Image (cartoon, rainbow over all chains, first blue to last red; front, side):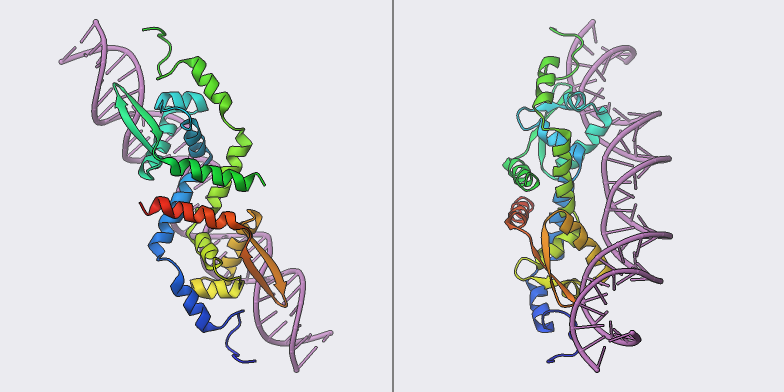
Length: 115
Length: 115
DNA sequence: AGAACATATGAACAATTATTCATATGAAAG
DNA sequence: CTTTCATATGAATAATTGTTCATATGTTCT
């Protein structure tokens, strides 16, 4: 046995090398935070309703059978993750998908779940 | 005003139409469940350590400065989501990424966060 | 200005979940 | 077969988070 202190599969030097090749903690945190936003049924549903048309809060709530408050709370999270954008139209706020990443992410996710 | 009962942006018929174009609840649930697996810093870190090399549990734990137990618990979740696979090598379990979806998902996620 | 409507938001509660600790399983070596 | 090592797992705890309820903000209309 070459190294009696190494109780793992690879040697400590390689471990150190691998550790240093990891992205910074902050980047990994932001990444997981993004996924966490997608990781809720309600939010996924909201995003899906916006796939084809822009909608106001009340429409989304009716469409999903949820309360206005709950939808609004979740939209807030989607906004801060830059997954949806909005514009004011009189008393209403019209929400829409912010960019095509949302569609790609969901499509890619579906590919995996459909296997 | 055409329809005084419609307090939303679009008409009730369109809402119904949109509702029926949504994927089934089960599909959306599975999708959000998949994202939820990615939505944790520890699990993202584990996945990243497996980007370049297959590793045993102890190596991952050392690399990330986490307890063996915690890593094992999270690997269990990654396994059941089919994001990692494993093989036995004597006393050790060698884990590796299950397929390329993992890489694509993380890459796509990074594209969004890096904006 | 006041009423009505659409949306946002704060606090409280319930449910989910990541980590820790202790212990169990399973393989290899003496 | 007993000990040692690597991993898995169950129970308990602490922290996070989604929903509800009540209320605030901001817009339109009279």
